[in-house]
Length: 60
Length: 320
Image (cartoon, each protein chain N blue to C red):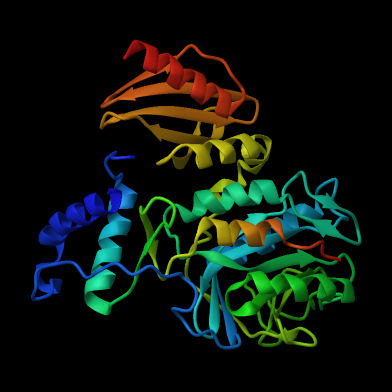
């Protein structure tokens, strides 16, 4: 398990996620593999973006 | 469990930052397992909002491209930004790259470098998503081609809302307009100094592209600092991306010193305030160890970034 301290960006993202949850009932996402914090419902996963990038077709 | 530790930490953070937002029970709400999709109902795009930073990148780099040795080839960019309910906000451009495959009649982007570029740009805002593609046509075809339609119709299934933003650059803008600033002869067209970008949307169920009104607003191109070192990113993308997926907490930065622009990787170590710092240039990689305020250069030459970092981590483990 990884118990390292959060860096500034991760801490800020977690605070924003908690605030969004408390204020607007916005979902907090959990990584299904290791239960770690995986962002909020507004966030987009790396996998989604990179899958789209790598599948850009040839343009003519 | 790790998640319980996270919740405990979160409880302490909440006490610091948002007492008014705490629920009456004093406990955090239960965490729901859900997915990002479905939190926003997407409607067909009504417009694309383009920041002036993104607009400048497109016009400047298109003009620059036309003066280069490969200037007769098509070029292009992918667009990252925010997908709102019925509009898209373009906030970043990732270039086709010097390792693109292109001719006067086609272009295929270097997607390995663009994937790494997306990781770097999105480290500060993980809402950024793929919006679409901009590419140029050497002639005066201001509309995506039939070949574009065949590929894009399948590809838009990968995008939020099942719809993409597509820009076509041509060098046939009317000389009748102003030369000092961009003008819009039509809602989906921007022209500047002989160059034209025409904007379209295409959804899964659309038979063809439809003109998409494009509006400019003040804002950055969040990826522009990366453009000056794009050849460096292309040269090291595969190994840096592998390293990023293997080690947690890597942060990226861009510096510009007397040796030119460089990509910086900060790999956190187990002890707070300690990190491995890697300065990556196209033909040189330098390694440093950070102890609080002190930075030590490591006499360690390895131009393969991932291997260099792992060898250095192994050396540090031996000395611990």
